[in-house]
Length: 127
Image (cartoon, rainbow, N blue to C red; front, side, top):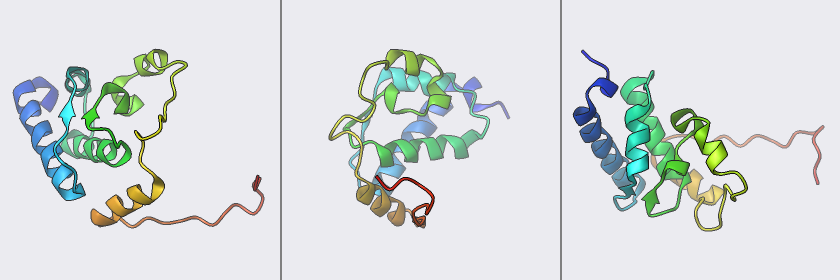
C-alpha cells in the first residue's frame, strides 16, 4: 500500500475526518485549516503514518485556542526550519491564542489521558 504522502486525495480526506473527530471529542467546533497547513501536512513524510497524523492534530487542537489552524501552530518537525525563521521576533505565545494549563488538562482528561504532575525540583530555582 502506498504511503499517505503518495495519495494526496486520501490524505486530505483522512486529515479532515481526523480533525472533525478530534474536535468532537474535545468539545470544539470544527476549525478551518489554512492552505499553508494543508500544504505542510501533505509535504511531511509521516514516518509514524496515521497515528502520527492523529497525534499531531490532537496536539494542535489541545494547545491552540484559535478558531483557525495556521502553519505556525504545527510542530517544528512538520514545518521545518522555515517556521523558526519566519517567526523571528514574533511572540510565540500571544495572549488568548494558547490555552491555559487547566484547559489543556481538562481536554486531556476528556481524551482519557492521565496528566501527571511532577513535584518541584528541590535543587531548582524557586524564583
